[in-house]
Image: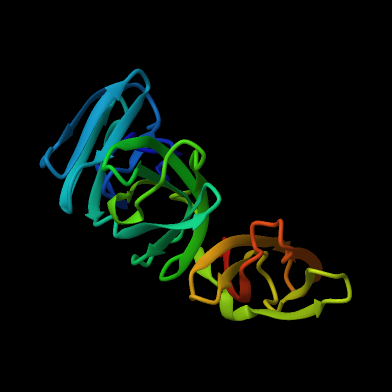
Length: 279
């Protein structure tokens, strides 16, 4: 797994004459670039097993290794800058389930209190003989703190049969801004859904969503999970909005239930809404 890199500028005074300590919270696997003022002379960590640091030209690269606390020191010609680093568990779970027709549903649950703009998921798909037929990485967007989000991956259903009980997925790295504050604002999004079934074998869903916040813009994702009569998810549709404070927008999607479609076994659908703001 390759750690995602985030660039931050430390809030240090121009003189930086005395030692100054800044707090930093990272999740296991994260790495950040720090560009201190002046000429970077040397770097060190008092607990390399928790958080390591290396000098790379004018920048220091801090990498979170395992849960714990460490102090990172950056010595420059203007003084010493220290970071009190707290490394937390990257507690995000991912599962795969077969939707048929060469698609697998990827379900990602964020058990942390931190929202990530992207999370990388390493996954392995195996056939009914236990053989690995595909390994890859999927980047899932908008993984909101305390919420479950959805995506899908594709496989070659013509040449082999997947055994979902043998398949696996694991969250390996997250991307976010260390200078931003993220808020779960799902409850601030008011949505109405209109169903139109006038077209034969087609269900048209029209979403009208409003951001009731007074100041902050919201990233909104509506996940439409399509089920068959066996309560199995056979499809996934998404409707996305980028809503400024107080604004309303409209979007739509269709579910084709004809005998030749992927969703010919359609029974019902459910909508899961997730939203966050970045400050």
